Each structure stands twice: as structure tokens, then as C-alpha cells.
Length: 336
Image (cartoon, rainbow, N blue to C red; front, top):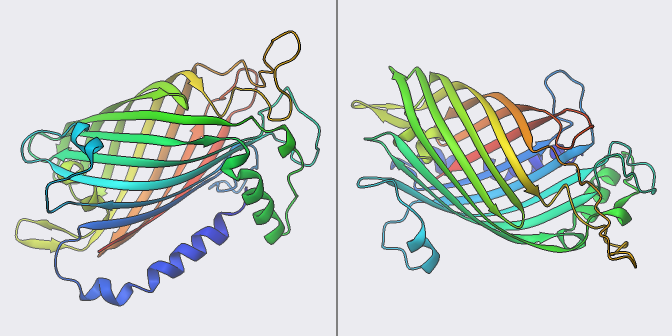
């Protein structure tokens, strides 16, 4: 979907209103607003698409606490040991999946089904700068189906940019609550002069939205703050020795191997076609690919308390017998 232009422009305008405040600020930032847009129209080769996982929009507010936390769920989230740098966050996310041909209202059983999800995330990212490891926990709660408003969002954006109206949302996957716990652990393997860094990570997702296990290495090369100094320092000015470094620029390379058991955006009953008289479910995408390979690469540019990054993700098929997919991710970070 091609809504990324409008969304990115709106958020960028919002961030620019605070430019004077950012330059006047002398203390280390303790809050971060993040906006990112996943879109398969974004492609460095110039060959964008509008299919499969076609759009994901996310807005986050991350912050460091100065006082003891009182939210009961936060007490259950693991920390990365003594001296950890902890960041908490609230997020709202909308995801969309569509078939390749959005011009027909007919059901397309040989392609991805229309699906939308809208959910909130409570997050806790804990980094240990001494032992160089991190724990990242996300608690997800939301809904799949018409209540996710994916149809309305895609239709409105396509109308705004005079693009093909999506005609098949009557075939979208039905309403289902989404509850998930996502946990990621990462560890540094090699660092050289804050120029080269190799980390390894594993992520477990459990719940009604997705059951999956992912493992990956991550290479960062450039001028950058140490990854495990904390989440906020990856996108802002930082101190090296007794000198403040205001500019970061680095390359990220991250191949991911994911084993998928369940994905609620790829499998389910259609909203207006419930179980038949025989009791069999109308499973629109039964043959999900249980092993998905992603290759992510991109760049991060940061100056002061503002950063922008672009990441390209090349994925094998999400469903057996279908096509590979490419998604671009544009992310803006604003800290204060």
C-alpha cells in the first residue's frame, strides 16, 4: 500500500516543530518517539508491489524511569542484571495483508487472504552495557478482523493518492482477539573500536497472534554508539570518553531464520463465510511456510536527538507455493 508518503510527511512535520527545543537541550534524552512505516512499495530497486504483507504502521513512545515502577506487569518483565539500562514503552500498530490482485471482489483461494490487525504493545527493553547483552519483552493485545480498520485505512489512502481501490475486503479474515508475548535475547560476540560490532539474538513469540522462534546474527559497521549502551543511545548523541559525539551513521546487516508454527494473519476463517454445515472451517491459508528466511540490510543516520533509518527486508514466501516478498521500512526517531 502506498500510504507511507502521507504518514511519513505528517510525522516529519510534527517532529520539525520541536527542532528548536532539541538544539537547546543539554541533558541526555530520556524519552523517544518512534514512527515507522513498513511498505512493500518501498524498494531500493524501484520495483514496489502491493501484496502479501503490504503495510505496517507503528508509533511508539519509549521512556526511561527515574522512579520505581508501579505498573504490576512491569514487575514481571526480566531485567538484564545489575546496572542495566531500562527503557519502557507503549505502542500502537496496524498491519495489513492483501492478495496480489486487489481490483477484484472475488475470493482468491490461491493467494494471501485479506487480513488486518490492530494492537497495542507494552514493552520493556533492558540492556547491560558491561556484560553486553539485552532482554527485550513485548506484551501484545489487540484484534484481527474488521475492527482493525485495515479496510478503511487502505481504502482512504488509496483514494487520497488516486490509486486502485481495494475491492476484496469482504473476504478478510474474521474477528479474533490477539494476545501475544514476544521475548528477545541478544548478546555481543565481537566489537572493534565502535566501528564493527557483531551480535547474536533469538526471539520467541507465543500467543494467539503468532507462535514462532527466530535466530539471527547482526552486523553493524560505521560510526556508532555501542549497541548495548541502551536503546536510546543507538539513535542520539552519546559520550565517548570525555567527548560528546553528535553524529552517528552505520550500516546494519541482519539475516533471520524463523520457524513459524502459527500466524493469525495468514490462517483463519473469512468474516462473512463461517464454518460450513459440515463443521469444517473455511481456512483461507492453511499451507503456511513453517520456515521463513529474511535478509535485512539498511542504514541509520543520526544527528543530535533526531535520526532516520531505512531498512530493506527480502523474505522467502510466507505461504507454500506463493511468491517471495520485499518490504521497505522507513523509521524516524525523535528524542528529548
